[in-house]
Length: 435
Image (cartoon, rainbow, N blue to C red; front, side):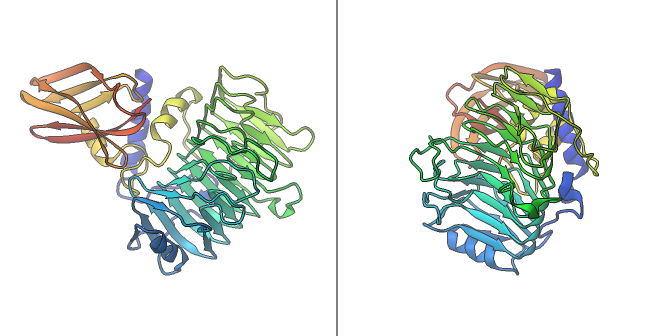
C-alpha cells in the first residue's frame, strides 16, 4: 500500500505542475518540442466523412474525435505533408478498421509531417493477418511526433510502425494488445502475425541511419502480443519505465541491424526472451536497472548505448507495473488531461476527502472518506464510454474519518472504470482498473 501512495504522489505532482499549461513532451521529441495544433479551436468529428475532411484540411489544426468511428473498406487516412496538428480523442474515442485486404487495411498514416500530436484514441484493427498489409498507424518520414495515451489493438499488420527516416519521436502512456485471435493462411506466410511495433523497415533502408531517435515511456505490451515490442533497426531508442506481460510472447525487445538501444527501468513479467540480440549486427542493447519476474530465455543486454541528450523523469523499475497499469492507454476523461488522474481527483485527494483502494482492484474495493457530518453515500460505476454498470454501494458515513471495507465489484466487467462517489454535498470521480 505504501508503494501505491508513492505512485499517486508522483502522478499528482506531475499534473499539478501542468494544470494551466499544455502537457509537456519528454524524450527525443522534446528536441524542438511537440505542441501540435496548440490552442486552436477544435473541430469535433463524429463520422468518417468528417474525420477524413478534418485530417486532409491544412487549416484544421485541432481535431476532437467523438465516439466510435468505423472506417469503410479501403478507408485508411493519410495526414500528408502537414505541420502543427493535433488529433485528440474525447473520452471513449475509437477508430475501427475491419478491412482485411493488403491495400485497403490500416487506419492512419502520418507522412512527411512534423509537430503532430496524437492522443487518447483507441485504434482497433480487424485482427492479425499476414498479407503484407497496413498498420493501425504508420509514421513515415516524419519529425517531432508525440503519441500519448493511446491504445493500439488487433492490427492487421503492425500496431504502430515507424520508418523511412522518421526522427525525434516520443510514445508515452500507450497500450499495445491483441484481443482477437490471429487469422491464419495469409500470403505473407505467418499464421500468427501479432507483431506489434517495427522501427525500421529493413536492413537496406539506409536512409534510417542517424534517424529513428525514439523514446517510449510508460507503455504497456499486454494481452496477445507475440513479438516486436519493439523490433528496431538503425534507431537510437530509449525504452524507459515500460511494462511487458504478454503471456504468448516469443520475445519482447529485439535489437536488429545497427540498433542502439537503452533499455532502462522496465518491468518484465511472465514473458519469454525479454531482450533478444541479433548476433553481430546490433550496435548496443544496454540493460539498466530492469526488473524480471517469472521470465524465461534471454534477458541480458550487451554494449554501451547512446547517452540521451535530454533530461527526463524516471521511476524505479519495481514501481513500473502499478504505474503503467493504472495510467496507460486511451483512458483520459479529457484530451487536455496530462496523466491518468483528472483535475477533480487531485483536488479531492489533496483534501483527503475520498479514496478508493486498492487500484487496480479485483473482487473487492474499499473506500476511505472524511465527512463533516453524517450523510448518505452512494457509489455508481460506469465504463470509460459512460455506460452504466450499476450501483455497488449505498449506505451512511459518519462525521469524521470512515473506512468502508469489502465492497464487492465481482459483477463489474474488467477494464478502466469511473467510480462516482455521491454524497449529499456533491460527488467525486476516480478512475479504477478492475482486473
